[in-house]
Length: 155
Length: 177
Image (cartoon, rainbow over all chains, first blue to last red):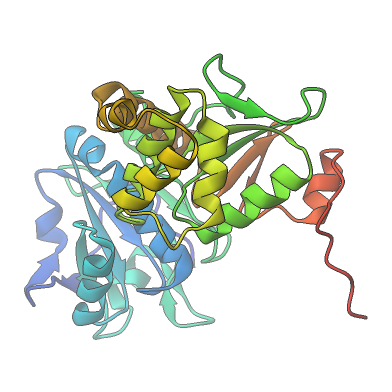
């Protein structure tokens, strides 16, 4: 499975917000969105990842980007994870049907059945402007890579 | 630091907190006083006598005392006591509330009013934030994060890492087999 490439349109997908509402391709329209695919709420690497991104969340917002965490965890688990860290980054659940949206973006890790560690940036036209995937889910992309990606997408 | 795009590995700055063998390989040590792994890393680097430049990587989502303790260490630095204060913080991470910080400052003979004023001052907050943002721009992803010889090392340094930098590992763990 390879991650969706820049220039490709975002696929049709449905994720669930922490309010139980659907979040779809339509919700990408009109803004810059960073989808942060991660394997598991409360795991150590994912904890490091969201603590780092939260630290510079205002910088992402300042560049007009909205971040969402995406995993196959159920929404309540995602919410508890975010609240335990004081993280305000929105969470989107790919729990049921499990991993369907992650697969659509090429961000599913079959060996362990989780969203893999990957990043996808989409522009206001719902087209992917930048993407990143780790060699394995344990590889953590620094916040600097997202800023590189936002810069590349704007060029 | 406004630009958070990928930056080159950090090098020594004039206002870094530095100690250890000045002839040894410099380790830029990004750490947080609330982080247990950082305490272990701090102890190992100190015991090895490594040439260390300490910088803050104080993430607000990591621990609510990350920022206050970092600022307190900078306030101690204003009175020439950065390392003594840092050692005292790492020696007892179970006591990092304000009364515990005052107790450490008193034990080190610091002026408490000045210490309290400085640790809440905008320049100190800016210094800590500068360090943290520089760490993130350099690709830091966890605490501690060590930069030496152009390479990055996440987590606690082990004996092999110290040996590659030319330092003895004073707390070498004996092999069990």
